[in-house]
Image 1: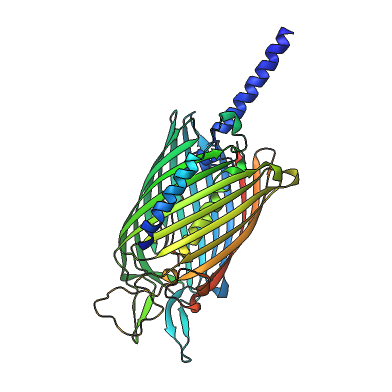
Image 2 (image 1 turned 90 degrees about the horizontal axis):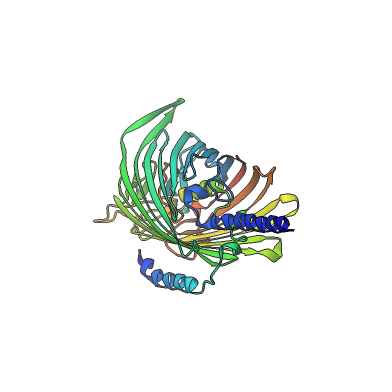
Amino acid sequence: MASEAVAVAATKHSGLAALTAAALALPGLVPEAEAAAGAAGTAASGLDSRYSRYEESGGRMRVEVYQAAAQARVTDRLSLRVNGVKDVMSGASPMAVVRGGDGKLGLVMSGASIRDERDAVDLSASYELDDATLGLDVGRSSENDYNSNFFNIDGRWNLNRKTTTLAAGYGFASDNVWAVSHLDGRTDRLPGVGGGKASHQGLLGVTQVLDKNSLLQLNLTYGDSAGFLSDPYKWVLVGNRLVEDNRPSQRRQFGVLLRYVRHFAALNEAALHLDYRFYSDSWDVDAHTFEASWHQPLAYGWQLVPNFRYYSQDSADFYAPIFEMARCNEPHHSSDYRLAGFGAVAGGVRLENEFFGRLRVAGGIEFYERRKDLGFSGGAGTAADNFSFSVFSFGLNLKF
Amino acid sequence: MSGTHRLGAPIGLLLLLGIAGCAPVAPWERGNLAKPNMALDTDALEAAFMRHAYSAKETASGGYGVGGGGCGCN
C-alpha cells in the first residue's frame, strides 16, 4: 500500500513536472530564434524545408523560393541554427509611369528579360541563462545586382514567474545595390548606377500572459537607413523628360506591432491570432496592417488555418505617378508603386498535420490583391499600378 | 512620422490596461498557452517568406524582430 502511494505520488509529481516544463516553455515567450525552430517554439533539434511559388498577375514577376533550416541543441543552454534561402526570379517589373495617347496613365515595363537569383544564408546562436536568453545572428544575402551583410543581437528577460518577457534587439545591415543589363544572354553591370547604404534597427518588446488562455505582445521598432536609397531601375516622368528615381539619402522608420493570441478549448482547442501594426517613416508614409488567422484542429491530427490580411498606406511626400512639370528646389521624385497610396487585401489557407510526433507536413495557398482604391489612408497613386499575386507553398519539418 | 505621437498614448494605455488586468497564472495553468497553435508564429519559414514578400511590395516593414538582409526586389 505504501509503495502504491509512493508510485501515485511519483506519477503526479512527474506529470506536474512535465506540464510545468511545457508551460514554462510558452511559445509566445521564447526568443525569436528559438521560436523559429519549430511549431511548438521549442529549441529542439530539427530540420525545416519549404518550397513556395510566387506569381504576379499580368506576366510580371515569378519567383521560385527554396527555404531550408537546421537547428541543433548543442548543450542544455546553447542552440545553433543555420538558415538558407534561394530565390529564382524571372519576369517583368514596372520601370516608369507614362501618359498614353488617350491621356490615361500606363506602365513602362522592363520586358520579360529579368532573370536573377538571390542566395541568403544566416547563422544564429542562442544561449539560455536562468531567466534570460541571448541571441546572435550573422548573415549575407546576394543577387547579381544587390548584396547585403548583416548581424543582429537580441536579449529576452523573463519576469513575474515567466508571465512577462521583456525583449530588446539591435540589428545592422550594410547593403550595396547597382544595376545590370540583360542582353544576348549576358548580364553586365551598368557603371555609375547605384551605391551603398547602412541600416540600423532597434527593438523593444514585451510579451504578457493575460490569463490561462491568452497572451499579448507589443513591439516597438525604430530604424535609420542612410546612403543610396533610390531604385536604380526606376524612372520618373518629370515634365516631358524621363529622369532617374531620386529619393532622400536618409530614412527613419518607426513601427508598433500589437499581437494577441487566444485559445478556445470549447472549439476543439482552436486558437485565434490577431495582429495590428502601425508604421510611420520620415518620407511621410503612414501605414496600417491588420492580420487575423484561425487555427482549427480537425480529426486525425489535421489542422486548418485560414487567414486574412488588410493593408493601407498613404504616399511618400516626393511621390507622384507623373510630375506634370519640373519642380524648383525639389530634387527628390519617385513614381515607384510601393511609395504610392493604396490598399491591399490578402487571404489564404494552410492545411497541416504532424505524423509520428516528428514529421510535420504543411501546404498552403495565399492570394493578394493591391488596388489604389482599397486604401483608406489617401495619398497620390494610380490604378495603373494595381496588381495581384498568388503563393502556393509546401513545407516539411522534422524534429529529432 | 505624423502619426507616431497620435498612436503612442493609446497603445501605451492599452498595454498598461492589458497588464493591469492580468490574472495571476500559475505554471500548471499554462497548458493551453503551451499548445503549438498558440505560438506567435506557428510556421516560422512561412512567416519569414510572407513578410519578405509583403515588404518587397509595400512600404511598411518590420515590427516582428530586428535585422535580416535587404534585397533588390522589384
